[in-house]
Structures are given as structure tokens and as C-alpha cells.
Amino acid sequence: MYSKLLSKKKYYGEGKQLSESKNEEFYRSSFHKDYDRLIFSKSFRRLSKKTQVHPLSKNDHVHNRLTHSLEVASVGRSLGLRAGEIFKRKNESVNPYDVGYIVQTACLAHDIGNPPFGHAGEEVIKEWFSKNKEEDFLNALSSDELDDFLNLDGNAQSFRIVSKLENNSFKGGMNLTFSTLGALIKYPYASSNCKKIGKSKFNFFQSEKEFFELLFKELDLVKKDGTYMRHPLSYLMEVADDICYGLLDLQDAHELKIITLNDTIKIFEYILGEEEVENSLANEKYDDFQRLSRFVALSINNLTNHAMEKFEENLENICSESQEKDLLSYFTNDDLKQGLLVAKRLGHEKVFNETRKVELELGAYNIIEILLDNLIKATYRLHNCKDEKKLSFKDQRALQLMENDKPNKNDSLYNMYQRVIDYIVGMTDNHAKYIAHQFIGMSY
Image 1 (cartoon, rainbow, N blue to C red):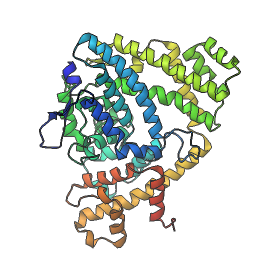
Image 2: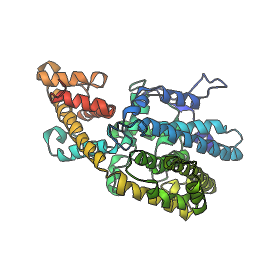
Image 3: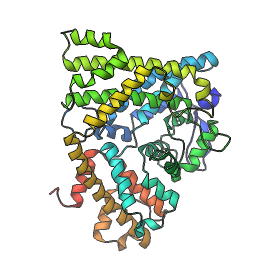
Image 4: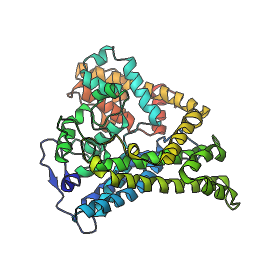
């Protein structure tokens, strides 16, 4: 089992033979190389200018997608090392540090496919396609292809970036190991499943379907009914993310004076206990932000310890076809679960509906709609005429802006539209704003 789940195989593009790296040094394994490829990639660097929660914040202490991903990866590394020790007790050949690198790298990559302006950006793209789904320029798409755009999910775009686009375009992307790719997948199904589950969560587009099926077959994660199991290590990547955004977003909200320390006390009384909270509040050497930071750090420790207890206790089930949907479903400590629930409720009530955030997200709607209106329609006209010289001057210039992401006129309409989405999703918040302003003449 472990030889499959911890596979070092890599993919080098359609028609290429799968292979394991032949150039492993004792100090730098294939899994270490996965981590390095993520860290040095342009897509990862751009996360520094993408929204975590608060768009275009002028406060330098607020998280962006890059700092969030680094913190998730830090928690994920600890979880992975502990999982590696558990695996090693069952199979002597397992190196715990390999498992640590796998989870850490999956954590680094988990948000790499998020569009500018965070989840608001996803919503704009989905709504734009929904609003225009009866228009001629979308009628040529199959229902499965259209579903990819109607339910656009950063998780699927992350998989597309690391397995196809970044570094070696259309030749395996970053050429990551199969185990790292498997650990990245939270939702092992296509967009057509979104109607069944009632939410836009999926992990591969139609364009990556063939490789996804190959990947999960190689990892031995295909169920008897032909659907797919989650990779056990994906549970650790996901819980690291859940813990970090559930707690660290509170620090940003406090920094921006959206909430006070008192607003968070109930959360930490559940997770840490009343005595620990009272002692920290009574200690006059801490200011409120230091108290909050201390509460967050101690809470991460308590939550990760419980997560690993449940992971080890339920490993057999997690590796079976009856696995639960996430690791939080295995939690038995009601106080910890309640603490996370109260944190989530506070976020929805005070943080996500804060006035400036709402104002900026409304601006983001206009920005992304301008980009889609111009680029999708120019792409449709290119698809129809097959000759860029016959396009209007404006359409030609719009497509030239896309540079390496410019659609290939000989591709299917679906693949051409995907290149537009690749271009827009790859933008930082600032660049999306700049290009949209160029289209409407506001940058002169």
C-alpha cells in the first residue's frame, strides 16, 4: 500500500512514459525537489499579491495568499512528519521526512490556482458564465465543459497549474511526484458532481480528466464502483488549512480593528480552557495583540495534536472506501469542534461582511467582468474566423496582452476559453485592476 501512496512516479505529458527520478541524492529526494519546484515557481510568487481575505489591503501585516500558504505548509510539515512516523511503524521502508515533504508541498500548492480577489474572484467568474450561458459564444460547449466554467473552483485550477501549465507547459507542468499530486486533491471528482453535492467543489477539469484517472489508478485510489478515494495525506493538507484560516484570519481582523480581543474569548475558552485564557488575560506584560497571537499558537498546537490522534486511530478507515469526507469528521473532542465553529461564525458575522471588504469586492466584480467581456468574446471571434488578422484592432490587441496564454486558434473552443481563464486566474489583484482599467481607458 505505502509504495503506491508514496509513489515517486512523475508525468511528462501525453504519450510520454511515466518514470521515477533517476537523479536522487541522499540529501535531496524526489519529494524535496517537489517542494523546491513549488517555492521557485512564478505562480507561487504571485500569491504575495493575491487576496487571502481582505482585498488590496494597505496594512502590510495582513495575510496574503503567500503568507497563508507558508503558514499552512508549516503546520502541514509537522503533521506529515508525525504521519511518517506512524507509517514507518507499519512499514520500515517509509522515511518520515519524505512524508513531511509531501504534505508540506501539497500545502504550499493548495491555493496556487485561486484567482485575484480571493473567493470573490471565483464567484464573479461563475456568475459571468451563468449569466451568459444561453449566448451563442457558449452554446458550442458540451454540458461537461460548460460545467467547468459554471462551477469554476480554484482547487481544479491548482491541479491544472502544477500538472500541466507551470514550468513545462503541456508536458507535465512541474513534473511533481504522484504522491504529492494525490495529497493535493480534496475533491476527487469532476464538475459534473457539483449538482449532486450542492456546491462548486471539484478537483479536475475535463482537460485534465485523462491524467487524473491515470494518477489515481497509479496511486491505487480507484473504488470498486469506479469513483475515487482521497489520498490519506490529503486529509492532513486540508486540516492544516482549516486550522490556519480558522484562527489566523482572526489576527488580521484584529489588526484591521474589525474585531476586538473580547470577540474571540469564547473561541479560545473552548479550545484552550478557561484557566489558560484567564491567566493570559491577567498577565500585564502582554498587549491584546500579543494575547491573541499566544491564543492562536496554543490553539494550533491543541488542534494539530487532536488531529493526529484521530488520524492514527482511524487510519484504516481513512485508507478504505468508507473514508469520511474530512479529518474534522473524525474529531471526538466537542470543545475543539465548538471552538472552530464559533470562530467560523465570528468570521461570517463580522469579518467577511465588513464594509470596506464588501466595497472592494464589488469593485473586483467590475474588474473581472471587464476582463471576461473583452477576452472571452475576442477569443470566440478568433475561433470563428481562424485568422487573427481578420479580427478588429481591439480584439487583436486584447489577445496580444495574453502573451504566452494567448489561445491557439486551432484548439477547441473549450480549450481556448481555458487559456483565458488561465490568464485571468494567474493575475495578481493589482495586475487585474491595471489591465481592466486599460480596457476602459482609465489608466492614462
